[in-house]
Amino acid sequence: MADVSAALGKDLVGLEPLSREQIQLILDTAEPFKEVSERQIKKVPALRGKTIVNLFFEASTRTRISFEFAEKRLSADTVNVAASGSSVSKGETLVDTARNLEAMRIDMVVIRHPASGAAQFLGNRIRSNVINAGDGKHEHPTQGLLDLLTLRDKFGKIEGLKVAICGDVLHSRVARSNIWGLTKLGAEVAVCGPATLLPRDIRELGVTVLPRIEEAIQWADALNVLRLQLERMQGGFIPSLREYNRVFGVTSERLDQAPKDLVILHPGPMNRGVEIDSDVADGPHSVILPQVTNGVAVRMAVLYLLAGGSPDWATASSRSDER
Amino acid sequence: MPSPIRLLDDAALARALQRMALEIIERAGGTSRLVLVGIQRRGVQLAERLALLIERDHGTIRRGKLDITLYRDDLQAIGPRPVVGETSLPPDIDGAIVVIVDDVLFTGRTIRAALDEVADFGRPRQILLCELVDRGGRELPIHADIVGQSVTTGPGDHVDVRVKELDGEDGVYLVRGDG
Image 1 (cartoon, rainbow over the protein chains, first blue to last red):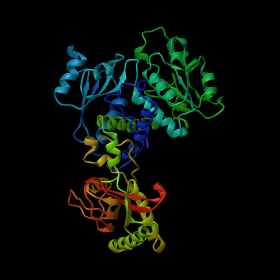
Image 2 (tube, each protein chain N blue to C red):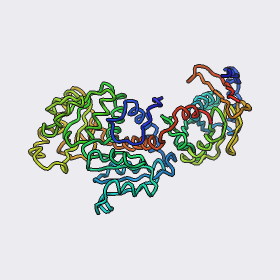
Image 3 (spheres, each protein chain N blue to C red):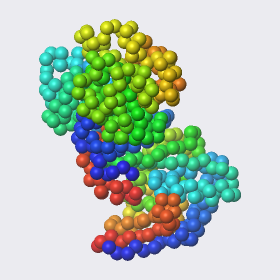
Image 4 (cartoon, chains in turn brown, yellow):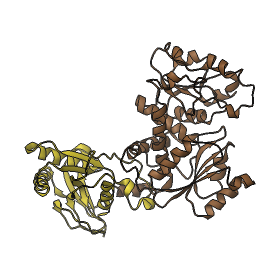
């Protein structure tokens, strides 16, 4: 039984503010939710009557659909708001948009925004629960959680694992959430990529820097291969995509040199032939699709835990066995 | 704190389960369509014991587990429980005779939730309710078909069912509340 004092609070803005126990609570809660998605009727009434707004200021397919499935499988009512085609494109501020939504009596907001800190900013200003679905280069906590869950499924535990995060760490909120989550749960983390795509102060987060992909492959139990975020690069970070693939691409030739079979993660969407080759992405050690499946379960767990508000845990647990 | 009153010791609990197993077969008209479903947590162990008793004289029977947490009607009031247990039902329960096995029947709200959850998995021909202890105090029109022991209790009382697998001993205790 997880520590009952580990409730999550009002918002989920990142894995940095969470304790090890809170992260473990989310992962443990996600386990039974996996089964709900395998049922013929993929729905439980836990969040019936709750209204959730998915507020997406950036393009997203996987994350938005995954949140929507999670919400619907918990019986919540959902509304999707995209930046284009809403009053955001008329210049309305983030807070005004959210306050107007709140005036329609919503309960939760799932937000993706290009500005780092947007989720925290919003969470401090509205009463509804706020869940960060990616804010700039800051964090993408549910992606970090689903990576943790996938690694735990594969290895049985996170503690002691060696995970190398490869590629465009500089622009990656996924990398940050992974680093926080993995180190809190006792994994060793290394980052690997061209120096232009590694944040200068990355060592302060307690990670090792491996300059060559071959070293990462020798060292790691699992590789989390990041997407080269072409849309966030205004030139000059890498000579060319072909050059990037030649030096840092995760290819089966390189993986053949590893002392053991490496588990391969990728947050998607993939640039096949750039950061990862197709035969690796589709190979036997890739867990890229299980990551997507776990994403729904982890998001259900987060929604479920946040929706309870600040429960009186003592009463809840003593009443639970007998009614 | 008043000392607990023992309602059933391990021998009495074993006898009660023997009788309940016979009643289950009688009510279900055999074992061919029977599915025993235990409610998390102690209903799961009780269902397993009943299944083993039935299987001594009959063939293997199908079984399942149900965690009703996500179907509770007071989720918002008490907040989510930290960890939800496993739910697993046999693949095809349409036309089956499902026996829900639970430790203590009190308000009936757990069973209301369990019925909703079972309905999301299929349409059994019949659902029966089997309770080790019926302590009265119903808040919903629900009754048990097969009961191990009935006991009159007050709202502040607590009935404590203990099973070897989780608690190291078999027994049922009544703890009187204040007032």
